[in-house]
Image (cartoon, rainbow, N blue to C red; front, side, top):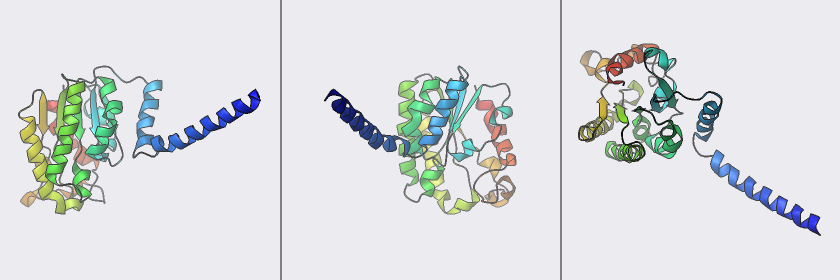
Amino acid sequence: MKISWFLGLFFVNAWVLAQAQPIATNRPFESEIRAFEATDKTTPPPQNAIVFTGSSSIRLWENLATYFPDKKILQRGFGGSELSDVIRYADRIIIPYHPKQVVLYAGENDIATGKQTGKQTFDRFVTLFEHVRLKLPNVTFTFISIKPSPSRRQYFPENDTANQLVKQYLSKQKNTQFVDIRPVMLGQHGQPVPALFKPDSLHMLPAGYERWASVLAPYLK
């Protein structure tokens, strides 16, 4: 009788775990976040580092740390994430590291979905910023302006709105920075320089990241 009871309990628990597991693993980008956590266990992250996070423009920045050799860099960009995703995972990819600086590139994908305006994207940014500032009151928070991707020209006006609102907001906050990388990515007539982008006219080539690094370097702590 006891054996049957224990077997019954075992199968009930197994069923509950089987039902609960997909909820956790099926969340957007969950596998990438878990990969970061697994890496942290085998290779402890540096203390008092600069955390770069956000969307694929950070994730695809190859050899990011080599662009800033005198800094301790931790690269935590993931997928084609939106600000809502960074909010969801902030307590796992930002807060635990207790960084001295957070460098964020996000917001472009929010607007490119066609579902978020520049103002709504800004509101998402404020939610993230306030959460990070609550948990890490002394961290330097740096926002990289939304870039002018040629394949997303139709969203430039909303991008400009988001950038302007974020810039104005951060100007009133302590220990913050708005880094405008747009001027170095524009050529004649204020148009994006094609040579900075991959064939998809969205993601950048090393030449694009070199221009980013030249602008960003003075802001890093």
